[in-house]
Image 1 (cartoon, rainbow, N blue to C red):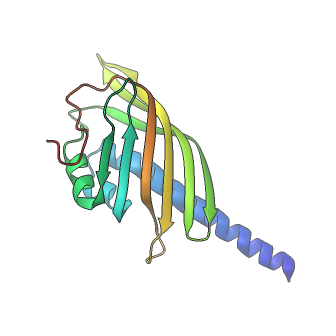
Image 2 (cartoon, helix red, strand yellow):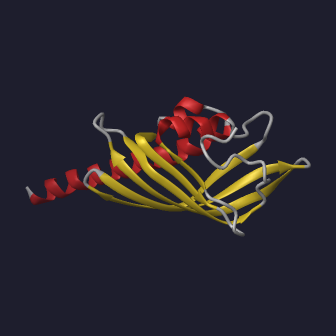
Length: 160
């Protein structure tokens, strides 16, 4: 009976990791193509999006769905802005209904017809299993090690 319990536990852990990977991957697809409701829906109601920027630039910080929606509404998107958020080497730790994910990211931007690295860094995410059984970001944060962000890039949910 013990082997059967281990198999069920392993299958559950694998299913949780796959569901969390789906959230991580959906984040990039949704923000790249302007799927605002889908992107905001990846967060809990009080979810936090925080980005520490390099070279003394002020951080981007949005808390709650209203600020998240305001941020993503002005975020560049295809086809006007051709860019791709790439997620690399995710490490996921699940503990019951909470999870931490650490991964690298690279943001490619079409510059003069060539894909160039616009910025790269590390995501540090806190996720929770919601009442509906789906996983969502409680807090997603990133630290950008290099950035070519223009000064006009929206920094907070209220900036337009």
